[in-house]
Structure formats: structure tokens, C-alpha cells
Length: 189
Image (cartoon, rainbow, N blue to C red):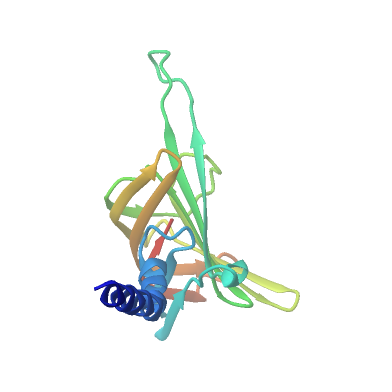
């Protein structure tokens, strides 16, 4: 009887060890993982699929976010919490998409160029660096960029998890005939 229990325990331990790789992969792919993030879609018709790596390979993750929390007073003297999520997506060594989301709630938004430099706006820019030549692309006032926040959940007050659809055209600030078309989805925490 005791031998059967030992064999059973040994069998359970072996099965647990064999399933660790799947458990680790499932954990990494889940939103509970601190390094969770992805970007998938097309940029100018080229398919892009990016996925963050698990620790210790996370130093070069392509999708990184930083949350801002401001607490200004409203008209009634009470503190309001303003939630802003800044996400940088490294497409390749010379190309970055930067997205700033203000008010982390599910819904659609149409972004235009942010010339006012205020904190309370949504924004998207696309940057392409080629040697010393840097091109910055942004939405136009005549053709807003569409984003849809499809999911927002909070692990705690400081840790949002978002998933966002992107669909639109960004224009070179120096040459409006030069543009970038993005149709993608990303998730980050």
C-alpha cells in the first residue's frame, strides 16, 4: 500500500514537471503576466506580428507601456483621477509607434494632430529613423485616425490592461503626400 502511494506521488511529480513548459507558456500568454503585450496587423500592407518575451528576455520587448495618473481638482474642489496610458511599440530597429490614451474606458475615438500639447488628449505618432533623417507621422485634421479601445480591466489602481484596435492613415509632418496606413490591434499592461 505504501509502495503504491510512493509510485503514485512519483508519477504525479513527473507529470507536473512535464507540464511546466505548457503552464509557463499559458501564464506568459495570459494578461496576468507582467510582461504581457502584443501588436498584430498591417503597416502599409506589410504584415507585422510582435509579441513580448517572458523574463529574462523582456529587456527588448517590443510593446512597453507607462501609466500616468494625475489628480487635479475639478470645479467642486474634489480630486479627479485622470488615467493616461503611454505605449511605445517598436516595429523594428528604426520604426516606432507611440500611442497615448487618455481616459481608459471602452469606446471609439477619432484622433487628430495634437498641436496643443495638452495632457488630456489621445494621440498617435509613427516615427521612422533612417540615419540622421527622422520622419514623424501623425493624424490629420481632415482625416482623423480611428482607434477603438475594446477591453479595459484593472489588476489594481495602477495596473490597467488594455486592448485596442487601430485603423487609419498617419501623415508625414513635413510632406503630407507621404503617409503610413495602419490596420492593427495591440494589447498591453
